[in-house]
Image (cartoon, rainbow, N blue to C red; front, top):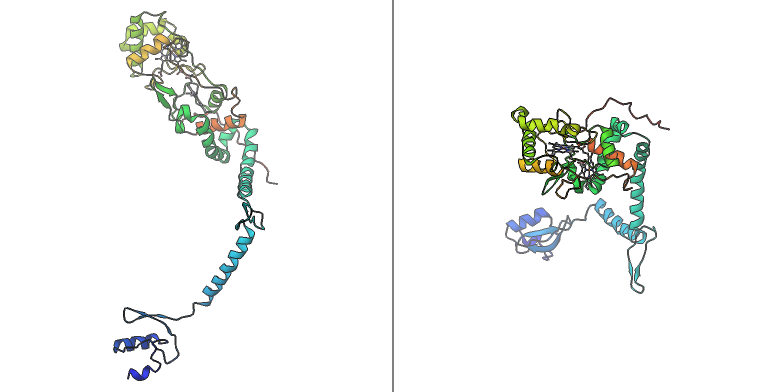
Length: 335
Ligand code: HEC
Ligand code: HEC
């Protein structure tokens, strides 16, 4: 029976069913297709596995042709073919270059930014802050500005940086401020810079007085100032109150630290506090603490718009203090 289904005997051109049947019946030459259905390729392996010789679907063939045409178009349009003679290449008919593309992209970004930048220029930081759209823009675009200009001292996201004497530049993402945390205070800090000044006391106070007042200051931040009467007396009777205030909470006008919280700019150990009191801050003494916030207006490093952006950016670290509400930004008419 197998013999008469197998007239050509070349094993090609068999339908799947026939292939299977003849394979099952142990035919020696099962790859023929006498009915003229879908044929196999004639390539056989593992005794009885063969490929159908189907035409690929029409869509696939069209796709193949289209992609072949696309390659040619692409090659002609874009820079592609190296020219063997000169040390150059075929530049393409479309005139595309990577630089042009980058500039076009940059143009798009600038157009988007431009709208905001123009608005920012004429607004005060407080008004910018009151506008959600602008604040959102500033939060995004301020990141690079802060990273380039401020983070070296204040740390990424304003976490502060430490040197061997404690904090080098203050933390900006908490609500403890030397110079005030309202939006305009922050703006002023950045534009004008600061150098908090505390006089040295090594000559005006005895060693014992310095120890006593240092203990008093430590006790203050643990809310037990009255347990150090000797130190309290020094504090009240020397010049401390003129800068730190009777309540020792500091004055934002001069950036004199709040001595009643547990936040220490400089070393907050007894030794550290003694040193701050003895040598002062920015006092010119060789062992004085140094704290210099540069003026970014003076340095001419940043435009006023950038400083405004940074004020809002820093405020939005979370520690900004509210002012009286201001009128929101004027709505720009959409012509
Ligand atoms: C060279 C280091 C340095 C750089 C750079 C610097 N700062 Fe400062 N910044 C300081 C120091 C130090 C102080 C504290 C000054 C003081 O104690 O009198 C300070 C204070 C501040 C304050 C006031 C903090 C408070 O508690 O009131 C703000 C706000 C501030 N910086 C923001 C910025 C911003 C924004 C930038 C970037 C444009 C920047 N700083 C760049 C060192 C720096
Ligand atoms: C001329 C003003 C002035 C006088 C007087 C003064 N201070 Fe200060 N003091 C400051 C300023 C400003 C700072 C903050 C410096 C900074 O962080 O930039 C400061 C900081 C301190 C600190 C460090 C706080 C910290 O967070 O590390 C201590 C402690 C301190 N003062 C104690 C005293 C005591 C005690 C006296 C009196 C014996 C005194 N100060 C007198 C201005 C003054």
